[in-house]
Image 1 (cartoon, rainbow, N blue to C red):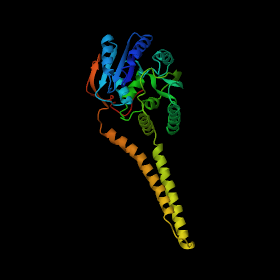
Image 2 (cartoon, rainbow, N blue to C red):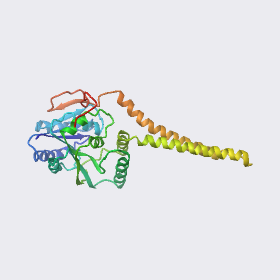
Image 3 (cartoon, rainbow, N blue to C red):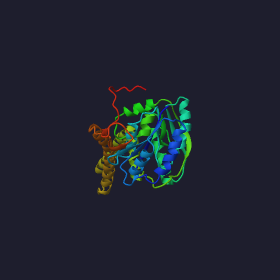
Image 4 (spheres, helix red, strand yellow):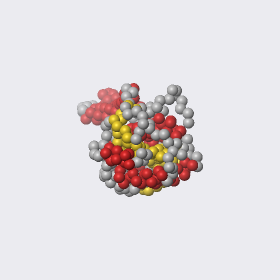
Length: 325
């Protein structure tokens, strides 16, 4: 059975020489027929040079260099578009997710599961703020979606060929892969593990990137924010009615000088709610705008040990809206 491994890399020159021997040994423990795709996502260091050296030393290691930084989710998407294995592992190069787990994941898949995802029990080397916000986000997203998205699970997972084919038929640009895999359904199971501290370097997921991923996750799989905006508009209308009633009551029954403070308070509340609702709708409209342009999701500038296109690549489209699974 052939295995594919997809590894997005962004400024990972320090950790790749440590990661690759472990990943190769782990892949060989499950199959003699494997391929490891290292995706250089526009790194500013010598990551691509390290990848090319690894490809020269081992023909089963394959390098794909994107023309610029497209982001983690699209880098993974680029790797998935080349995979030919019956099972595919998605893993980062920072060694927080142990490559050796490919074997117990494969054993789980032998039981008939379509997806085996890593479920974090402990998260070493991460701040309380990151752990807390991640826990809150996963639970908020779970409450907003109509299907089950596993909590405390990232993109580290093993998927079979059927799931890979369905992912490749999904054309959305603002990709939240762990949600997309969950949406596919089938038989999915978590494998608990303790997440290690990053082996070398610094995390590439800044607060800004985590926030964008969170927004992508919510807007890609839930229309609840739009319903919140609708609810807020009704609440704002209710406040306006109360304020209008108070103005009429004051005009007819109270001999008072009407000040500007109460008016400004009401106006401020209404405008705050209005702009908040407009911001939510803007997020969805922005995603529609990006989607309808139909540009390639990523561009490949170089490739090592890879036969196939080196230009613009997008996920394979299905001829109809129904994808078989």
